[in-house]
Image (cartoon, rainbow, N blue to C red; front, side, top):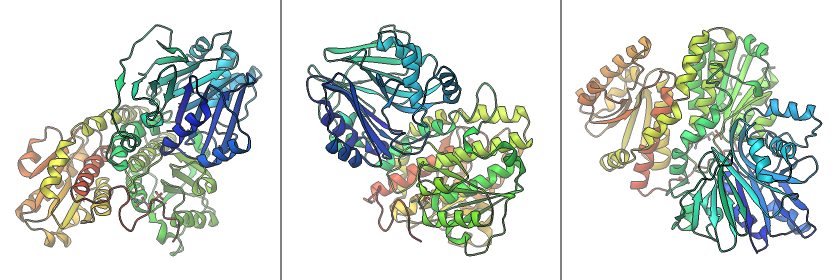
Length: 617
Ligand code: M6R
């Protein structure tokens, strides 16, 4: 995530950039910074950790201004959320500064190379490398040096750079995260998102991947990364400012649902090697030897993160053959759990601040168990107290109902399970490679599901009056059924229960009548015998629900005629492997809950009685 803003023109840049950063704070808020080319012909930088108001205070105490500059609000991926790690980052001599949104995947290799050539680094970030690479390549023209630097970088990036040695221009580039260029009268803007600059201009265009923009006070030049000219058509943006902050979506939750292809891709980035066919977890700080040595794994979490934990049990046991137990954070420390140094305790939390999960983590540590945090907020309590960290790169999640954080947690757990399987030798090289190939297709398949929102609007119209819902799944799909039910109850206030499909006969069948919608997870991997067997059992469940006049909503493979004939409503999803299906099948359930809640007029982003982070017991 992270937000970048830049301005060049006749006005003073600081207030314009600060105003833009405020509107981008939803993209990250652990530190912020600004740099302008000032009256003394140098680049003055102000930075502060924490929220933007701290940067405002720093500027109040030590003002600066100029006619062009860049700013940044950070969501940490590499390095703690400190002032030293806040952007903009500078080169060795302070001649140029850069702001960056994204991840430099090969940053370790590049950093070692630069250090060997005498570069000294002042931060722990991957971004600082970009400044040093540009410094190395600079011979008088900033855009040429940026091109030379970009040629060495692997990863995703949106950047803006200014230099005192080639002043009066901002060079911006995109490979992945969004960059929008705003066109004013003799003034130009660059930003991560429309709301940052909407109060100054409505005429904008987005850079495409591989585009570079050179902004001066008299215009914008566009090229590709090699220097060939490119053109992009300008749009007039008619959104109102509030709508713009939500990226044109009605609610943050809806926006976050639609961000899942991006957040999933980012969470895989640098961890699943398409060419090498290997999983990498160099950053977790727990050595491969230790990873190989654990005899059991505990996973502790609350709410949606607990559902991810339960899915993690299936993933790790299946792929790495290590026994896994899953606990609620709120229960863990009250039952004197049996664990020690041979147990890895994984704590999962979007916020990293959930009191019960934190207390469970402390309990595990007190018993000598090393803890690994799967978390979305670097620098949060849980990450600070963990021996190792596996960050989910979902970016800030504003809606109280967790969506993209959940799929990012599932993705991180999949990578971890695959890595453990690879390191412990429970998977062959070919199996690891096949899983990686399939995983890398998931963001594209998510996009396919997200393309047809009308299905959920129609379903919501038919089902929003139901008083109760059941969600059924078997195996790894059971935790996903739980999560589907939680999404519906927390935002629409309709009672919903998730159940293991095979348990229906042992009681819940009594609930079924013609008024009860039953959402059944019936997608499967046709190439996997176990998955096919589960599918056959699920088909029997559908028949049992139909025999009792229940309303079946089946989430099934696209083209599955058998299910289409039995179910009242079918939501088709693309085929994938059994262990990756959860990443796809949760999306229809999120959208169904969302559209039902909208239809019922509920406060989707801030449901009653709930808070985003539960920091008390
Ligand atoms: O920040 P955490 O992941 O630790 O939060 C845990 C739960 O409070 C959270 O998942 C909650 O259940 C969500 N509202 C569910 O959408």
